Length: 244
Length: 368
Image (cartoon, rainbow over all chains, first blue to last red; front, side, top):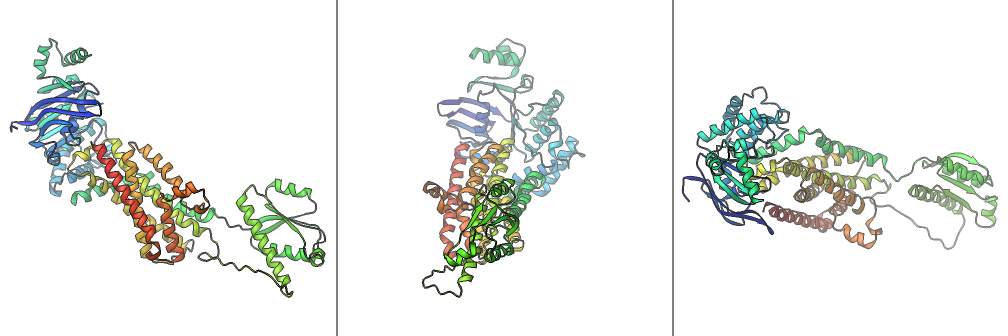
């Protein structure tokens, strides 16, 4: 394994009985890269991601995340990644501050560190008036932003985002991507799945998964040239249609 | 350890901010124990009865006076013919009619026996049964008084003594049962719901991706409920001692220890339920149907196990509540110690370990 890559995946496979959810996929993600992981529903994205974040064991193949083997060092991986799920990942019946303290706590951060970080986070997002309100009362877009910041609390090397912008309005999505870029510029690796093809354009490289396999992997620009279309949306449709 | 404390703190926030779960946790036990203690009783008090006296002599008058004097009955009507019996029953207020045959005292002395008919309204069979037993007892006592001076050569005089509950208070039967139900329900249902809630909301995934170990997550979710269930157990015991005058003949320490054992048993059952259900609703239904009904019906709480058909008797052995009720009654009413209850306690320990092992196994399968 080279030190250049944040994630290295070789022939990673996951089967459930006769069904092969992820079929021998291989790819690499460089440090500081924004990597888009696309695919239709049921293409195997979530299963692949679960193997990478160490909550599902691969059937076959290898994967190395942040320098650790997913088979044997899942616990080390957990410490060096941040994760934000498509489903909402903060507790609605806790305030923003309490959520920060809780998540900081389970990652083993010191009290003083948590205090400083939560002040930072609240300043950055401009949430002074809301900091002591229950998360459940916030609009979805804000929740997602807080959620993203909370996933960054323990300063992870790689951030996994599973459809982070589902159901969020275009302006908030835009702001959300600005946050993603800022983190990438800070040297963090971003691994993001999404359904929005315009978001795919923002990624450094994208992979498109169809029926458990990676059918295409390149920069958005190259993919558009290769398939002779003018948007990622069309690339996606072309790939999905060709298979069917 | 610090992570763990933070986790438990968060769990308390969940519980204390949700009024519904707060009510289930603390309102329900108090309401239930009060309901069972006061409202549900199979003793009878001041039952309205009617008398049809065909002979109207000294003896019948004396018997009627004795019945009227007892606190169990109050004579509401005197009727004078058979057709009126049905009428008073139809009205519904009168639960029993005493029908003395004509010539009662003469027959009693001259023919060595007179008949009194006791008619009871058996639409409620339990009450009817109790009424006929009570009146029978009053009549028998009167007869014994009459015969006091007469030497009868052969006579069996049964002397009944109700040990452990001399006054036959039904509350002594309900308190252990209600305590069992509440601890089972609070512990098993609330934990299974709170674990499945995290699954449903997706936060369980976040917790599993964190450095917390799955076992830590589960224990962290369970510890607050151990704490709350112990508080509940204490409330119930205090209520039963001071409000219902329930005795605790045995050691309070043992009572506490056994309660904690049962709470842990119920919690491990709750964890098991949460591993097989993916939504809060399923978890609640499984807890209610799978735990409440067997606990009420098959634990010996209300219906004696010994009079059940054999297959049900066998099934009842698999219900932890059955063993806990035996333990509770043993400690509270009989005052026995571990020397007599080790078998039941061991069964509870075994069941707890079994539930835990099953949950770990199921949990691992899910994680794959």
